[in-house]
Image (cartoon, rainbow, N blue to C red; front, side, top):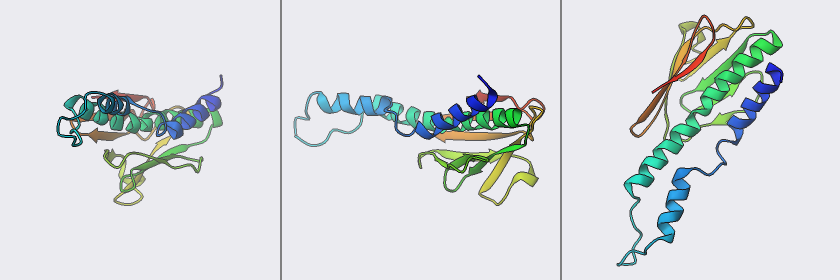
Length: 164
């Protein structure tokens, strides 16, 4: 499979991430189908479901990782520089040259550390990937509740790594 095909698959997976049911939905269904509250009032969400909801938010946010891999593979396959564009205020990202914007859940806290020259404004920045496999490097931090992940992009190799 070519790098271009893998890049397109990664972009498609990122777009589909918002529609796939996750653990929090299953947990909520299980609780709703369980024993009714003795008073008839809505039961508060259990701690297990709260943790599942936080995990789901971070999982959806991890689609940024697929976006970064997609950008890197696109640069290698097309032999052209590509950019992963992150909008911190809108909590969204885009893999250029693809015009599709991939939204993240509003509950996810998103931070970007990149080269000063790649900050387009105080809320929008990019991480560039070069045709030789390298990158300008940077870090994207995703947090939801107690969970936090750092997505590091190595400047020399363009390697994308997830640290928690």
